[in-house]
Structures are given as structure tokens and as C-alpha cells.
Amino acid sequence: MKYVDLNLDSRLQTNITNLGYVDATPIQVQAFEPIISGKDVAGLAQTGTGKTAAFLIPLIERILKAETNPESERAFVDWKAFNQVLILVPTRELADQIHENILKLTAGTGLKSATFYGGTGYDKQKEALSGNLQFMVSTPGRLIDLYKEHHVDFKKVKAIIFDEADRMFDMGFKDDMKYILSRIERTRQFLVFSATLNFDVLNTAYQFGSEPFEINISKDVAKAENVKDMIYHVGNHEKPQFLLSIFKKQNPTQTIIFTNFKNNVDRVAHFLTDNGIPAMGISSLMSQAQRTQVISRFKESNNQNVLVATDVAARGLDISDVDLVVNYELPQDCESYVHRIGRTGRAGKEGKAFSLVSDRDVESLYRIEEFTKKKIETGFMEDTELVKDFKALAEEPKFRKSFDRPGGKPQGGRGRSAESGRPERSDRKPGFNRDHDGKPHAAGPREDRGPRPHGDRKPHQDRGPRDDRGPREDRGPRDEQRPRHDKKPMHAKHDSAHPNAGPKHSHGKPHAKHDNKRDHKPHSKVTPAHLTQKRTGSHRKPVPQAGLVNSVKSFFKKLFT
Image (cartoon, rainbow, N blue to C red):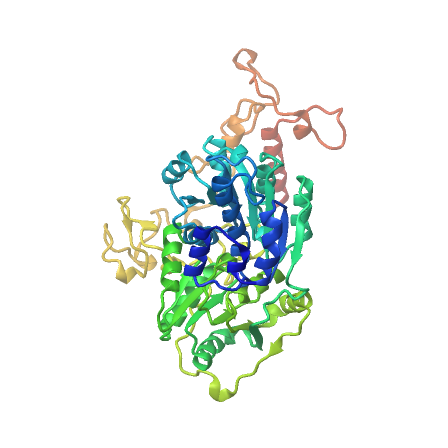
């Protein structure tokens, strides 16, 4: 079916023609009538089939009819100037893309649209909400923040759309989406669109009074038919070499490389750049301004654009010129694989997708093949096709061993093993040690740190004896009865401080009884009886701890003399 046959508003039809749209896709044809008549819809279609336009075009038509001809069957019932259409998306990039499509389709109509997501300031978003706004494209978190500050009124919402709803559920937005649905009037129109819909999404729709008209274009084939995907069985250490070899063999114009780990994005991007393939990285570690700049640069027409990304770029991004997708690792969930390879082969064009499968990816491969109901073709590379001379990929960052053990305790103490990951003193940062005057100095070998503040130390053999008393055998026999005044016993402080310890003679032994009761002042803190009594019975009197210690020492002294 052609768009001119849909009898759209003349302004909307002009914008569609200017965008080069002539024929409607199957999902657009089947979704048009239910949406234009006000029904709830759950649309399931392959990636790159025009799902965004499938709900935007009929919704814009309904608003324009409500403004020009409120009695029309296509018009929103009781539409006011302050009413809104709310579109919820999982990522900021998808929000920006839908917003751009709205601006193109509503040019010259006076309809307004704005995006709302985190990572940006509140002032511009609050200013946009202060006027009449017909389209709100938002992530769930920022929308709830604005609602709690009374800048958003959910009673104004006439239609709500969940784009990539399953992804929002996977990202933990399920409770937020229920929170929003519970505060919107149930007379609203509810639309859900994605390439993969699970039961949890539809169950939520039913829970809030919706009975969506289901549209399934995929026909049990989740993967886009015009994308040729292939896998290479390689070792994990061989992935960088095969990645370069794919570029050499395919010579793509625009490529997206997906990795599961955001810490790998910069590693892979730097590896490609060092080997003559300029690449950019995008992940959640970047600010929103940086992510927007990277996407804008990637969309530009160059001889070779390469984007290394996590799944933040796997959903909804419509870049029609992407001719190659590479999975550096296979995703853990099957839906992400479908959305990843769906970034190529869009708008009827042919696309290619290659996956580097190591032993770590085998289980994911089994799940993906079971989900897509298709055995993925295995590719081979001749030895002459492999790139031999290249700069190696940077090593993965090393973490302490305690981080690698789930639930493990940190490795504390001075002792260290070869696997502990703790740096030796020569490897620590400057300023770790301090001089005698308290100022920090750079750690490292002694000869590299300059002269000592108080002169060099003397060797042990040049320091002389510790005192002038001479050897033990030259000083005669020790008087066993003579008290040792030169060194206090290690228990002296403990004995004198103990509340149950009695008065002491010079030899450190307590009296059996207190001779002078007037001088005895009982302490308020008394040692519990179970700590001082012997275990043979509780009928014996408690023995003071100090006396017990001295008694034990006297016993061993007599035993060995």
C-alpha cells in the first residue's frame, strides 16, 4: 500500500513525501487502521521494518484531525490544546532519534515535541513543559522525577507508547512503568512496539485494563531476512586478529562492533585506531553530550566509520547505511542478538553480521540458535586472509583477587602472594613513604632517592656493642632474688591496672589479703566470675587474674630450674 492511499492530512502527506517514503511497510499497513480508530495495539515486527513510523504517522493524523475536524472518526475524543502523547523509551539515543522523526513528520503543523532523560539539566526540560507540548519522548526515570516535582501532569496524557518495552523491563524499569501507568487515565490509548515481546510486557498491559490488538509480522522469524549472519570459531586471544581480518576482507563503509563489557569499548577502539582503522566508542561511562557527539559523527558520510558500542546502541538506532555488524562477544540474552544484527540491513538493504565465538560464547550460541530457530552458518578464513602484522590489543585491566571471588573477603595484612595483585613497594605511587621531617618522598630504590636527611646509616658490624656491660658470662651469676629494675615484665601494666589485683611488693607478687583495708578502694568494674573461676567447680572462690598469671609463671620457673 502507498501512503497516498491512506488519505492523510495534506501537511502530513507532504512531509512523508519529502522524506522519500512511498510504500508503507507491512507493520505500518497493519497497524494504521487499529491505531487510527483508537484501539490499543501490541506490534511485533523484525528490526528495520519501520515500527517507529507505524505508530507516529497515525498518532499525528489523529491530533491534526482533532484540531481541524473534531467530529472525525480519526480524531482524539475531547482533545485539548494541553493534551499530550507520551512515548517511553529505554535509552537516550532512541529518545533523540524518535524526537527527530517527530520533528520531520510534523514540520509546518505547529505540533511540538521534546525529550526528557537523565544526564542533562532540568531547566530546559522544565521550560519545555511550561508551554503546550503535544509529544513527550522520555526515559522512565527522568519522567518520574519531573512528575514528583509537579512539572508533569499525567492526566493530560491521551496516548502512551512503550517503544522497546522488553528492553525497559530488562533494564529494571518495570516498576517505574507500572508507576506511570497507574497514574494515567484508563481511557488513554496504549501502544507497545518491539522486535521481541515477552509475556511479562503483555501481562502488564492486561493488568492495567488494556486488551491490545496483537500484530505479529515476524511470522516466528525473529531475525531480519535481509541480514546474512555468520560465526567464526576462534580462541579468545585470536579475536583481535580475526577482527582486523574481517575489515580487510569486507572493506565496509559503516560498521558497528558490539561488546558485552563497557570497559572493553575503549580497548577495542584504540586497538583498531592503532592499526589504521579510525574507531569511536560509546558506552554508559560517557556523558550525554559525548554520546550525542559520537552518534552525530558516526552518522556522517565518510569513507569508513567504525563505532564500538555496548547494547546501549543495539536498540532502535536507525542508521540506514550500516553495512556490517561484528559481535566481539555474543550477548547473554537472545533478544540482544536480534537487535544487534538488526542495525544493518535496514530499509530493504542487504547487511552482513559476523560473530567471533570463543569457548566463553558457546552457551550463548546455543540459546541464540534455539531462539531464532535457525542454525547460524560457520565461516572459515584461509591463512592467507589473516592479518599477521598488527599491534596487539591492550591487556585487560587486572583487579585484586578478592574481586574475582564471589563473596570473598579482602586479602588484608602485610603478607602478599604473587596472585594478590598488591604492588610491591617499588611499584607504589610517589608519596607513599615519608622522610623524618614528615615530608613525602618518592618511593623507589635507595640510590634513586638522594642523600638521607641525617646521613647514611652505618652497617651493623660498624655500630658497636649495645652497651658497655660486656658478655653475659663475664658479669658473674645472676642473683635470682634481685629484682629486675632494668626491664619491666610485660604483664606489669596489665596487673597494676586490673581491678582485682592486690598491692604488690617489689617482686611483683600480690598479697594474699589486703593488709590495709582503708587504702583499698573497690573499682566499679568487676571482672565476671566465669572469667576468673576454675572450671572444676563454681564453689571455689574467684582467683584474681594477676595472681593467676604470677602463679603460672612461678610454676614453670620452678619446673625448669
